[in-house]
Structures are given as C-alpha cells and as structure tokens.
Length: 183
Image 1 (cartoon, one colour):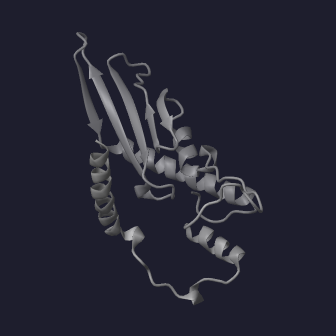
Image 2 (cartoon, one colour):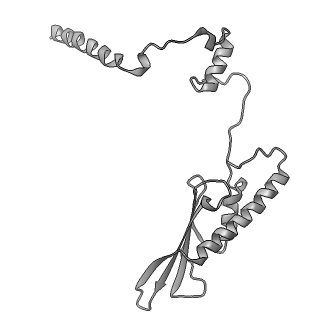
Image 3 (cartoon, helix red, strand yellow):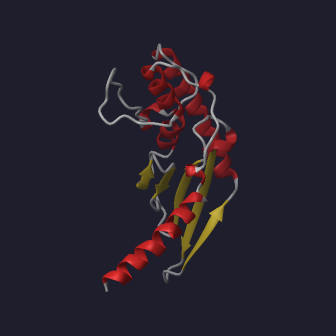
C-alpha cells in the first residue's frame, strides 16, 4: 500500500510540473534593468501604478474612495424630475435603469408605463433608451399592451436632455473643482 502511494506521488508530480510549465505566468520574460528604478520604494510605487501589485496595510497617504451619487449625474436627475408624476417600480442608479409602475391618471381603461435605460452618462441624444408602454383594457379586463414609439418618446427625451443641460451648467457653476465630464 505504501509503495502504491509513492508510485502515485512519483507519477503525479512530473505530470503536474509538465502541465504548469505550459502556463504563460511561469515562462521567463526578458526584462531590462533600465525599465525599473534601483530604489525599492520607487519600484513598489511603479508596480502599484501599473496594477501589478497591491497593499495589504495601507502605508503612506490615505485616500477616500470615489463615490458616484445619483444626485451628481445631471442626466439621472433630469430623468427623475421629468417623470416625477409617475409612481416608480424600480430606480437603480448603478444598473442605469428607471422603471415606472403602471399609471392611469383619470382613465380607468388606459394606463402607461415608462422605462428609461442609461447607455452613457454623457448628455447626448443617444445616451437614453426610452420605452413607453400603453395598456388598454376593455370592460371584461382583456388588456392589450402596446409599445409606443411615437411623439411621446421624442418629447420625453427632449425634455430630459434640456433639463440635464441646465443641471450640468448649475453643477459647473457651483463646483469649483469641476473636472469635465460627469462619471
């Protein structure tokens, strides 16, 4: 039994080494000493900047994280302000989507639902994908849901973009450290 275990170890070890030798990470890469500074602190700093290393115990200056708040995105704020009369089913800033619930207003037989997807945070005409659904129900509760691609989508997009431009101008005026595009 003991000889059999040694035999397995003797057979598996070379097989493991052979399979690992084909890995790219273990291959020798020729590097020049000119590319790396001689001081260890500078080498560590360079590796951290290039993403080749990480720190376990934060040494040096402590920095806060970057937080993206929905209130700092003019396109998001403008979208919520434009459809503020609708009850919201879901508003997910990190997922980039706003979904309203069915809204009927004064009509009992017709209701509307709007979804807005954010394709980018830049204020552009192609930054939003707006879908408007209309549900028409008869007396017997037979409902038909139709996607509207007409004038209401164009008007919503136009109103959202107008408000977003105003919000971005206000943000630039109030923020002295404005660095350009909003993330």
